[in-house]
Image (cartoon, rainbow, N blue to C red):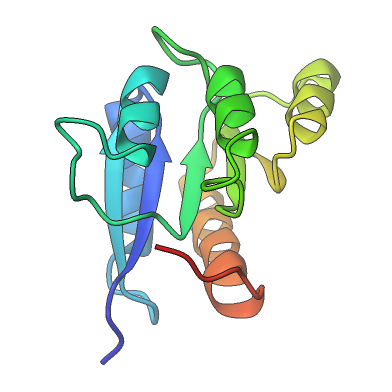
Length: 144
């Protein structure tokens, strides 16, 4: 059996986090989902600052844009501006796809922008397909 792959989800919606956990449970690729609810926690996790000292480096990040304290746009800019972290692919998951948000996300080097589907079956399909692509099909830099 394959070792689980670490994915960091940054979202302030406990419901969306639960749905992503459910979508990834029992898939062909074992995923260990780490979830934080705001941008400040995301940066602490990525930089392995307390209380996240010793956490694994995620192989993929699922990032909501509208977050409390530090928003997702700031997290994306900080991550892509750090040479130690910029190789982590970032999939922006948003409830809306305003042209300004899409442009700003890609201008800040998001790897992908996905609008969260409202239909549950489609939501599961989109999450599974996106994670499968980034962790099974795309060639990613190694790093720890």
